[in-house]
Length: 98
Image (cartoon, rainbow, N blue to C red; front, side, top):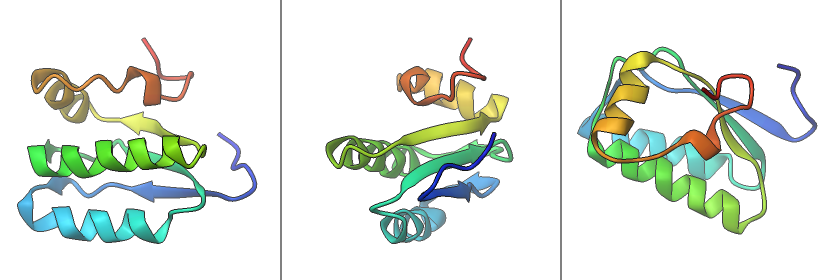
């Protein structure tokens, strides 16, 4: 997928647990003001706190009228989001929507 002007890509860690939540928040805060593309293809585990960080960022980007999308998601990431009741379909790049 070609990069648009002002677009930043972030790859998520394999394990997104309590220890990773503040690091993830810091990375996202550093990208504020840019369109963001998230690569979650390498995620093996994600905890609820990191889900909250991601969803808060998505809301912030929406309020800032900037793009916040997922270019790739692993099965583990997708299944965990579904299991805890978080719908990210509207955040998925159209190429990977089902």
